[in-house]
Image (cartoon, one colour):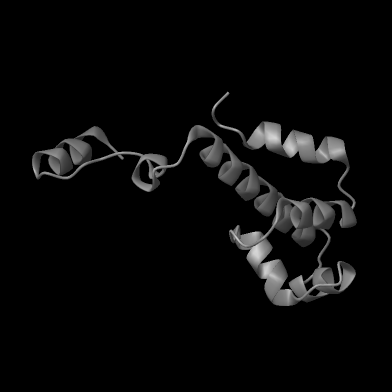
Length: 108
């Protein structure tokens, strides 16, 4: 958001802050959500690079297309375990996963 818009919002009585502040997240909760979103994005990228449909990935991991859609959308009901297992099923290595996390982190 540019400074002019921010100034106008504050002048009109709006409070401006981060999503974490709005939701009352601890730094650990914020980082956990960020990690899940990074893995979700990587899963979608890897699936698409292999020209797989969500349905094809679901079959590979013995799940459903709707579950894969939730994984790729970063749905809070999706476990980290399922995200990591799905990435591994697409051929990602632990090093690939670590690199995705390192590259996706904006706080370093």
